[in-house]
Length: 289
Image 1: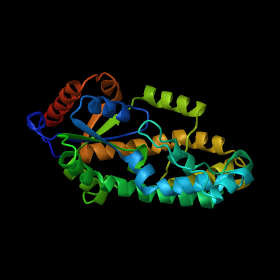
Image 2: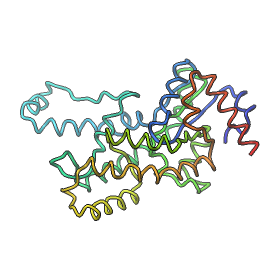
Image 3: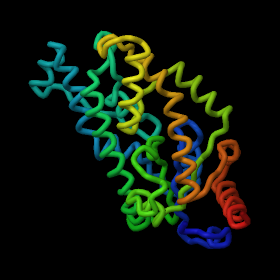
Image 4: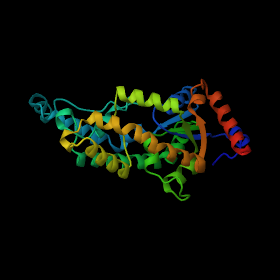
């Protein structure tokens, strides 16, 4: 870790941290708090994915749908209207909408082959955005004068790394430039995430082997074909399995590459000073044991 002790952390003129863990446990919330206090640059991996790496794909998909409507097609073909993606840190829906859900076209589903193709596009985009972290650390100081830096990653970071490999290229690069912090949820948090997801299921990115397994299992257990799958039912069924799949991977990342901070402690943070004190305390605990 780039800060081995609490004293090193407190004395650092340029504090650099990276949050990872399941979406909905406070990564973006605490990043906003740090940014609000003026001297922390907030780098959102998901925002980078949606603007730099998948922006054209997202807009082209919207245009493809618009071209199916004669009225809109005529306007597009005559350059009379413009279709764009209104991506913000708070609104990343264009990315999840593009990822889509597999299943029945009549219910808004994608063919499984197209769905896995988009999953692979996202995988490559997220890896590229993660490798951009070091560039944005330098850019945030050289261009804007920010002394401190926070990287807010997506929940799927654990799908593309091998936390048990000391030479994993993604984790080695991130750990060389940031203090990696896992925001760990409790069983109660997990239950709440599942309830929230059940009410409003959203597309996610999955490790290819995991996705292939759960897709086959779903078709078998429900005795259905691809075109009979209810897209929302499938991703609801998959979500709790995805949480269980990711939890040990996050834990292994934290054990080898960084710190663990519980989500309930993150929820108590109100200022940048609160955060800096909490990290110092966790570093002291790690040194003791």
